[in-house]
Length: 126
Image 1: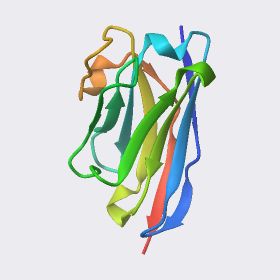
Image 2 (image 1 turned 30 degrees about the horizontal axis):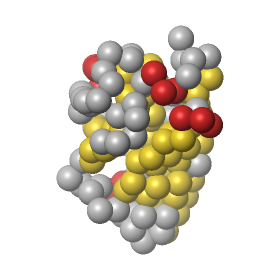
Image 3 (image 1 turned 90 degrees about the vertical axis):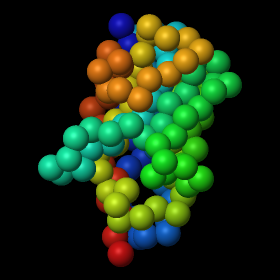
Image 4 (image 1 turned 180 degrees about the horizontal axis):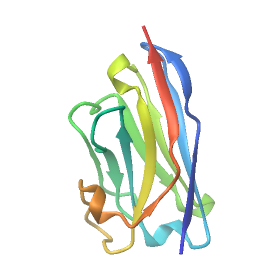
């Protein structure tokens, strides 16, 4: 069973950048399709980005396309989310999640991911 720990969140001004990391332990990360999700207060958890096991295929929510980049280093058991041109509406608790049931495809649904980290807070100020 994999354990996931996010880091890299913080307070940043609008237009700034942050890089989130998700470190895995317990199992090799290469066995998982990985996703990033976020949840703002009073809102449902929403899909942000996903990356297949090999890293060949990535997907993004329309709201972050062109600004965020998901990547993975399987040798380091780590997945990243580079966030540029941050907006106030990006403020949320960000989670990484792992899906062992897929390999070369991905899901946008949180229910498809069986393994979750505890989240890291991203706050974007004006």
